[in-house]
Length: 553
Image (cartoon, rainbow, N blue to C red; front, side, top):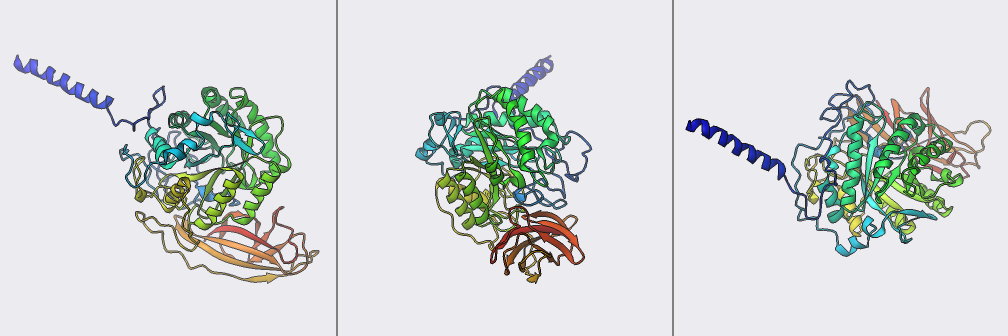
């Protein structure tokens, strides 16, 4: 009888202990709390191992690993393929371990001091600036005073969901000084909203993230992250359904901005983007009449000049996005931003990186600092890519770090530490493009082939008056799962008379998988390169620069 009486009592005790543990898990930092409807900390899904991001998924529910040998895009704008600050070329190994296995550390690390309370209070926050709107070219608060958002973007939510959690958002706000976070939801890549991904899990992660941002006194950008789909009209019906639903649920919150198309690219023109925007804006306005809406621009969000010539009319609180990667996009694109702003276009840099357009290679903090100076002078808001531990230079977190909050500076990459300096107002040390950015905790990247140049010249096509000299430099190389990849930079200079167009033949072997700032077509000895509409005309002595491409051999 004693045994019979004792066992149930012991079971009850164990059950109570287990229940207590379930209720009393790690508490969020002081002042942080989850949203009122109690969302879970993350959706906990990512792309399965061994699946090509461009192949048809076998299941609509991704498993818990990132695809091996695929490119969960780290797309830097301007790669005439899909600006790659968000993408390694198709077939390369992202070499990153998906987070989620390590328990978050709820304490703030000792070597990242909290942001200065005065600075944090002075920054635009939902608590002090309220709902944002657009006045002229400026983003302003509810009181009409100019504001600037400075923040960070997640990587693809389907691949790195565990970085969307209340503890990390509180940490970003309180310790890093971030006042905006961007939630990047891919559409057409593996696990994307329109390509077999778990739509409900993605949707829940977006709405949970928006509420956690609100609880941490940050603004949130809901990003419809088109990339391989190129033209936002491809999935316009799905976009209308998604933004209609999310604006109904979150429309009364004052911290939400909507980014309706990440990076239109390929042959997509401004007229295509404008047609899409004029369909999507009314959908959001039905539920959220005054929210700020960000509209992408062609060529991976570099052609703000096209939007400046023909802006969307009939709606208030519209801004236009520009993306850059500092080691690739320099003075020419900055000047385009400045001209468009001078023409009255409200610009928002919703994604940028301090590495090159592949998302890898060396960082260039000197050039990045020039960008920050220009954006600060114009009052342009900016959001850095990316909040992830993907093994690439664009990531803020070291690939060896499995934490999802509670970061120390040794857990960060050079990119992450640079962002902390910028947010704290500390100038960064100049770092030239030939100094690779490798955090002490990371494995050094594979040795690259020494840069090579291939100078040449040739007579222009019949009818032109110039003579064009070109210089080709290999700036990066790496080994992928399906071959060797090389990234090149091309400069074309007109040493003759004024020319309305240019064309050069370059002796390069292999298949071009990414390109930007030029048209490339296969020729007998390599590739023929011609200018685009904005860099075709070359006056005497002028040069077309920052023409780039990536070859798979």
